[in-house]
Image (cartoon, rainbow, N blue to C red; front, side):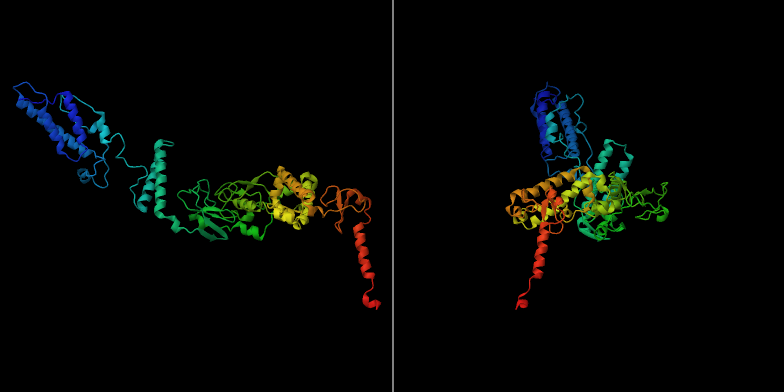
Length: 512
């Protein structure tokens, strides 16, 4: 009788690999059959110890079979959908224990040769992470549990070391928790798209940017997880929770009803005139910083608290008009929004406020001359069909007051004059307009003038630099000719004679 020995390394290794692959099937009895066949079909042993060796081999096979069964219970097969024993033994809220492949493999009996097959790990799928929880999967299913998880995550972040990897992971988890909470709360249904409050017209923003700051509470607006609004009039930004706390009306209403600047330089009246309170929110303030620091606005001269005055910088119109000073100064949030809305409004009449400014700033003289020429070109464009079709006057659509008068200026005009931009752009527009009237359009050329004093030279236009215009009849002459014969204007004299002749001629009834 021949008995196979389980100690033969070559065949045993092959059977072991095959048995391990059989583990991937739901038939648990196949393993013991394989080991039984291994005990009966392999290499013969010397006579005399056949029965004992056979019992020992079967005992080892049974022990190894039990260890393999325990191994199967400890590891779910990701390819086996009928893995019932594991599901019955593990509760719904329990997590699978972290057991590595090295710890879970059953040990061979003492003295057995150890064979490791790399295919074993690959076949069981342990080289990939099939059992860990996916990123972003949260067990909390309702709002209350998510809020509790958020508070616990905050506490963990405070306890962890600063700038550590664990703290960064905790912050990422906190962001995911807040996003999940925001989805469950569904703010799109709770918060309206438009809110009208104190003449503010707030629109709900859809941007997820985190670069905005709430104008009410002075904190960052987390666009990913927070609802926030922006006023379309003054661009006031705030959280949805801060809307009911706003106490300042929209400054756009003041701009539309009373568009004028404070032209006194920093008109300070003192903290006592404000009862030592913020000029906007009426919070107690003092120069010592207790209970809150008093910050002065250079535009209004009043004092504000740190919540209403963020040390924003703006150009002060009074300093520009009186001193030609464009250095930005610290202003309150309300003043900054007001100045931003007023920057393009032509409300400054420089000849009345400071007529000496034209003697000090040469660029203003040039700008005034160009504006006067454009006003003289305007009648040509209004009566010219080609100019209306080409919409030449839209070249000044950002400065409509330039085609209405030559006296009003905006702060933006003065800023551009100081930077040298307005003179260059206005010169280009002046050249374009003159080219259309004198070269491109025959109708506009036919509206030119001939000097009636010398009757020499080319066709003259009122915006030419070497011409003069009669203030009474708008006739155009050479400047030198008009000054030499300034006593009378030929056209005015002719018109006056015509009027006299009309009054002197007798009517038909008188002759009869």
